[in-house]
Length: 235
Image (cartoon, rainbow, N blue to C red):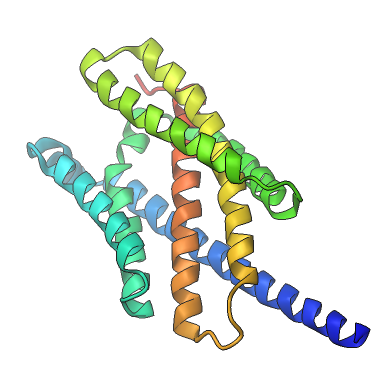
């Protein structure tokens, strides 16, 4: 009985580690696509003039990004794994296009240093979410409410154009996405444990893509909030 229990626990651990590794691999691919696209667009004068010069185009791209996220979240169970993978890749590229302004507005040194700070912070929070025995469900709910507040405040600040308010939003945003990173990591760990033994490769791939998208969004938003705080403007 003890031998069977040990074997079962070992099997669950292998399955969990494999799933989590797949999630982080896809997240890394998404971040790489976003970073490469943003850098390429920022250094292409024609693309910059088109994206930021044509009225409404940037807004269309942002709406398209939201559409990809909502579609993936709502239809992940019904679409093919290859489709989910392609949509995640396209979304990452679209996000790179809209984030290309970062390389225009901030110095390269501050972008790199902020990225390193973000990566270390994200890793620490993710490790905490993975190893903690504490249930972070209540924390996740609280942070989600904070996220809604950030969205509302950001929309209001579009009209107010207050630099002070933007800085407050950024500091609160850092706290929110630190909490969400830990919570989402723990949720992914729980998801990995409950994956049925007869799950197909496609089912596991789709779960990995959704997990990667969740952590990708946490990382990108944490990076943007930190960049607003620590980034040095080129102006």
